Image (cartoon, rainbow, N blue to C red; front, side):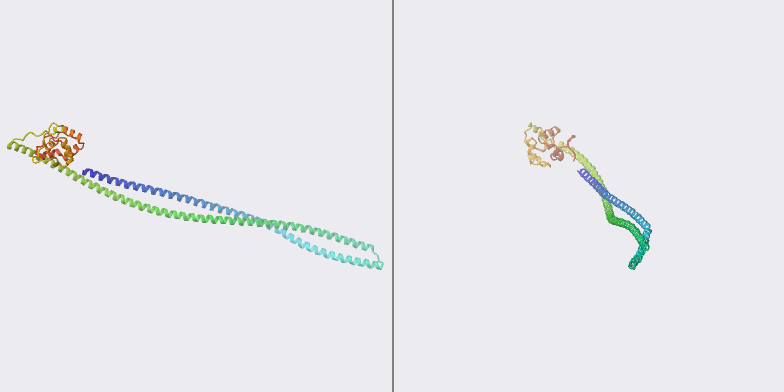
Length: 393
């Protein structure tokens, strides 16, 4: 019984240790999975951050290219303007020359008109006076016609120059419009790039904050993991110490049990020797004091119904219930099988035990458990034979 308890105790200790180790491994696996998930999230966040930084760098490169293109276009326009500045000077000089010629033409026309008026006055005066000078009048008319032609030619040149000036002004206005469009496009593109740059900068800042938060969470998880691992190691050490203590106690129990068993065997041997000695002395006394009593009742033959003799009275021998483990129901069953006294129990043999066990399945186990044969012989005072069918407790 004690060895069974020891084995159960050792099994429980081993099961507890294995359960603790399995729990520690399961928790470690769970923490490992959580750490892998955190690493994957952090890697994904870092990938997004790298993508955002790449977009920012590409946007900055695009902005640099746009600024370079804008600068190139501005330089080309400035070069074109510098190229057109001499034309503007020429146009201004032509305008001044045209104004000067116009003034001279107007002055010459005024002079010619004054001369013509004077000539007409002179002609009218001469006509009135009778002085007709046809040659002088023809000369003056030719000069007037020449002056008109010069005036028309100057006017045509002036108109041509005006048209050229208008064409140049149209070209300049077209260039100014193109410059304005390019400036607006550059400003719009710069504004869009600026907004996109601000959005990407904000996104990068957000991702950096998220990365910092993830790093802090990862650090906290790492600290928690280390703390739990230290707790589990401490518990494992404590469990191992308890297991060592339990093994030591089990060893001590086993030593006590072995000592108890050896002592029990010694006592049983001494008891067996004493019983043998007592039986020998009682037999010697019986042979010396008086003849033996009447014939012993047939032990187990009563089971088969061959011996119908009544059991001795209570004054002669104790009843069946004097044996430990036999109650009223067991005694009634044994009586129905012909077992009525302790002498029949003491005289049981293997064949008799098998026949009784067929009617009472638990008889043999109880017989060995309570050692009914030895106790019946002890109570009836019969000597222990050389062959005893019993099991040590």
